[in-house]
Image (cartoon, rainbow, N blue to C red; front, side):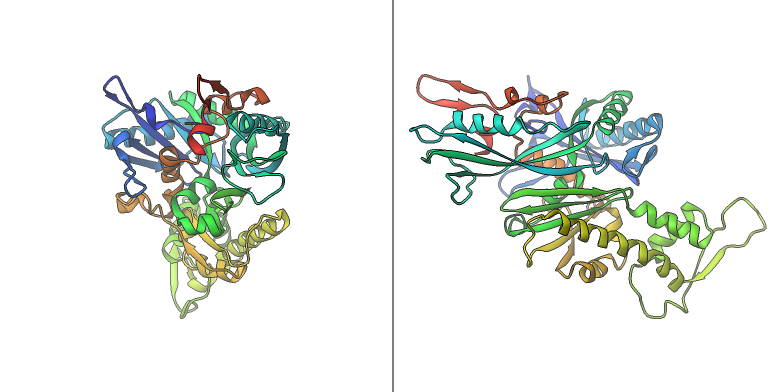
Amino acid sequence: MAGGVSLSGLKEGGRQTAVAALDLGASKIACFIMTADGVRRADHTIRVAGAGYVQSRGVRGGGIIDMDAAAQAVAQAVDRAERAAGVGVSGVVVTSAGGQMSSRRVRAEISLGTRPVGDAELARCIAAALAQSHQPNRRPIHLLPIAWSVDGQIPVRDPRNMCGRVLSLEMLIVSMAEPAFANLSHCLELAHLDFQGVAAAPYVSGLAALEPDELDLGCACIDMGGGSTSTAVFGGGSLLHLDSLPVGGEHVTADVARGLSTSKAGAERLKTLHGSAIASSNEDREMVEAPPRGDDPGAGPVVVARGILKNVIAPRVEETLELVRDRLKASGAPLDPGAGIVLTGGASQLAGVRELAVRVFDRPVRLGRPKRAPHLADAAAGPAFCAAAGVLLRAAYGPREAVSTRKLMSARLTPKDAPQVQRGPLLARAAGWLRENL
């Protein structure tokens, strides 16, 4: 399978291997492992064989700032997941929203002859799109065909056997900064793990949390992490747009710590237990307390009205959501007026975030959970674990990338990396995406 780890190779020589997803976040580092028998095709779900997570170390704002600390935390999370699953893994697919992730669309066209569209024509069109994939100092991590069309007619998912003069392809390229990609690779090398790919967190979170109708009719998945807030727009069953902001739940915690003169640990506890992004009754009469900053044994706890805590939290959350809204509008992402918003990520669990998002976006908003991984333990079944579950769901069911994993991880893609057509005695067959995804 392209763009991930193929499940077809999970059992080799009678020995069971596994697919592993590593969520490298600023608040937590989580690892989910799935074995071959975890793919439940009858109801299109998965069973996670083992999950492990630890508090994040060495990661801030979606980027690695302490390589050794991050590698140690990664190794611990993977070790816990391996123990729970009862199997070992040699490599992982990393999901992250860091590295200045963004997307852009490219359009490619080729002339058709007198024959109907076949695999060879699809491969030539993908090659023409790959010729536009290079961006200086950027690394493509997803190459996702959005739609095909013949002679400018209504877009279709599979144009084979159609006749016309021109075949067109619209493809989405999701990329990240090259230095961030190199840092991920080095971090996994220090943790003695094989780097098997990168998956954009809002994209795979959407695959885990969105209903089929939302994927088809249109929806925006906003992944609110500790170090970043990222957005993926879906429609017609495809990813249409992706963007990321380096602002997340950590920034809310820092605002509370500064505003109330408490420690970061105390601010996180206040935010989690008593924080809210909207006003509530009796908040001015309800008092909350946190430990003072510093190590003065004579200093008493910080005691404030809950309304003051809300006045620190709400402006940051509202500003973040407004930034997402404004960037979505400026991008021209095709989000229908009736399309809803699904919130994922740990920061989305803060009280009042959903209600505030309804006010900011003026759309239906709900919290997303990894519903297609129904057997997860309660501790790993919330919005914070959508991305890790989404990596495994993508490995099991797609969608596939336009090129193979090995080529996607290479230094630079060229038109030669398009799927290759193998001519047989009767039929022409295309490898990878052409065969599996159409």
